Image (cartoon, rainbow, N blue to C red; front, side, top):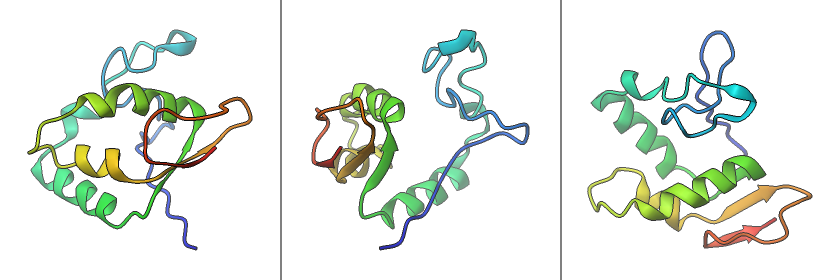
Length: 108
């Protein structure tokens, strides 16, 4: 088995809430959405290609819960990520999440 990490992080170490201002405001974080203004067609194609190489998603509980809340609502057939994100098995590293609701699941 091969594990590959893809993480969106700023040069100063911020990885919280890259998608939208209200994605993750825990701890008073008010800079959400920092990644989206920098996304262009080249980045989207490259990130979509990375996702196409995945056989599953290995997630922490908080990321899983945020993704499980948001990704199933994205139903645009032209979205380069939604179908793959929703179809891949999910493996969640957690001792507090007993079962997941975002299928298909691989296990908790």
